[in-house]
Image 1 (tube, rainbow, N blue to C red):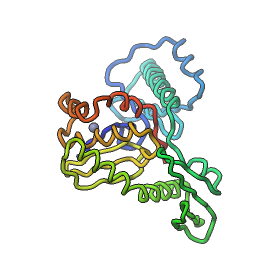
Image 2 (tube, protein in one colour):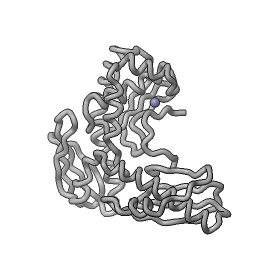
Image 3 (tube, rainbow, N blue to C red):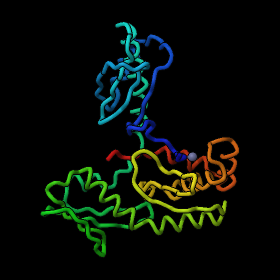
Image 4 (cartoon, helix red, strand yellow):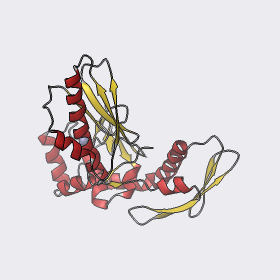
Length: 269
Ligand SMILES: [Zn+2]
């Protein structure tokens, strides 16, 4: 069982959000519903009928998918759709205000070369070119990436995140060890730096700390907070008040950094 520090994507199949309707819903004011549609970023939606007990909504591929429970009357269906859609639109709007950590987006769109800058100012240059097969090679300034014909955007995105993660791993590991020495002094069996679109970090019961490579692009106090958050799980595995006391002991101003973390959002690959 892993302890997830910040659940950004809630359900297991990696949707950005989901809501379920467990109780009967209030009829919505039609006016509110219409306004929700007139936001800055119109969002597509579609409705699916399922055999599930509860109605729920997920956000995937820029579309809100409403999955209706079985056995609803026409009126109930309308109520469930309206309610879930309104709640989901609010969430999507809030998310769109956040800073998207997507340093390779442009590189992947244009497919030539780009320099990316980490939060600590370090720069890496990526050079992309087509070729017979895919490989990635470290250069003095960054990486040359040859892209084979079967390579898709998703795979390429993963490859690039992996290269940067591998390069930055020792520095982040040192940061974890130093912060641990300065605070809890707990046993850590491993530190992993890898990209995930679902969580900022985790701590396994055996002491493996996983940190999201996206943290390379956030403010220093934010990455410090995520590290201390995970280290504190070596003291307590839950998110109880006692757990938060440990976090506060290690980082008295953690709440500011925790709020800061919520200013960011992860890209989907
Ligand atoms: Zn946690």
